[in-house]
Image (cartoon, rainbow, N blue to C red; front, side, top):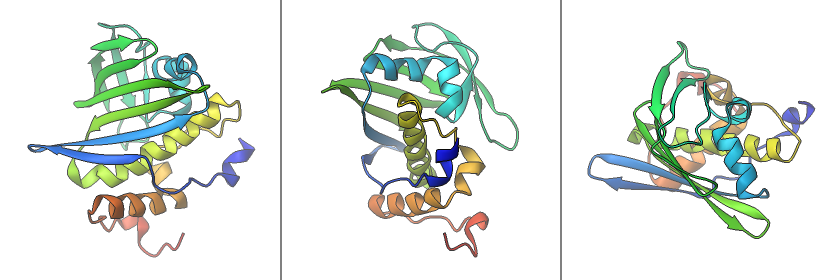
Length: 190
């Protein structure tokens, strides 16, 4: 995990938001240097998810109809939600709910890699935070799949990270929304 100290996320990019009635959807696109099959395994296998995702899974998400408990990592009190996989078209598309929010993953072969797209509905005030958090998760995922893991950075731990604060502000600006003045950010310059 020595590379973690040198890790700095790149600029906010590959994200957009859509509004449908009162429902907001965050769409994140990331190009990874790994095959769709390898990325699919990282999205569905509990051992892989434990290395990069903001939740732990007690079962594999790769089968339609599978019932899996997802536990949010880093929450003040563990938040466990049970989900049923509604779509698992390996290695192209995966759908389920996490904490009541729709999660739709699409994987598209791109050269020797994968274009990964995540659609998730999210509360409007949390869109920039969510984009910043997923940005870091995708960076951690890419490094994990490259064989240079830096360890999962999620929840309050990620929010203490200087790169997260910068990303949150950049995404908020891109989306034209105000960032809340979080107490953890007051007086910090990084």
